[in-house]
Amino acid sequence: MPNHNSYIGAGITHRGTTRPINQDAIFIDDKSGIWIVADGMGGHRAGEVASNWVCKHLPHEVKIHHCAGKEAIQAVHQKLRSYAQQEIEYEGMGTTMIMAVKQGDTINLYWSGDCRAYLLTSNNCKLLSKDHSVVQRLLDLNVIDQDEAARHPQRNIVTSCIGGDLAKPEIDEKELTLGALETLLLCSDGLYKALSLDEIHTVIKGANSLEQGAQNLVSQANAHGAKDNVSAILISPETQVTHSLQTQ
Image (cartoon, rainbow, N blue to C red):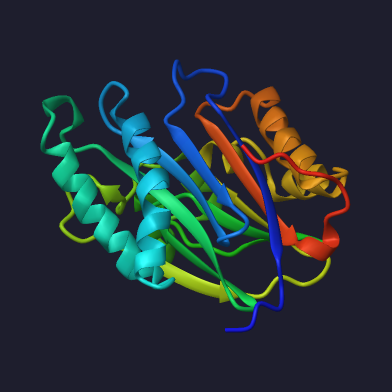
């Protein structure tokens, strides 16, 4: 497929203001066109192991499956479950995740759990993904509204992840093409639970580079008392990027 558009990404992950360790992980490979945010969960450090394991192995699976994201994620899911069974302290560990994969002119998003993708334009910030969570199911059934969802006692419970106890995770996908002045944000729930859509948009719009934008998002989330680990990756067409970037 012709390589018409090139995309550049920059990201940062931080343990936040209250958690003792960082169970988030990120992966950035502009050359291959693969970007991942993973938010681990499990016992002591097991979530950290799961998220880093996915960021290490999923890009390889994507290449094996020739960018077939769902098949790659399913393969990693099975291998992570097998890996977790080898060590008692890793039993049941898993991670939510979202991945962007460049395919020709388009970017394909794949996710399981409640990591999210947002599209940033000059005017607004739009949510692209849909959580696999208890509160999202209640929202879909019109049992609760957005205000109630933000306060719901089960707001942190996800219904799908990579690894964990599910035989087969729920994996959704979406295809998009970034416009010349548009930016894609991948993030963990620690970010969007600390910042509103308007705040996210203002921070990114005020940054001079993708790296600065990602760093400022995490700093602002922490300044707002982020109660979880915080991770963000920003992706834009290469023609939009005018500053040198350092990916982490």
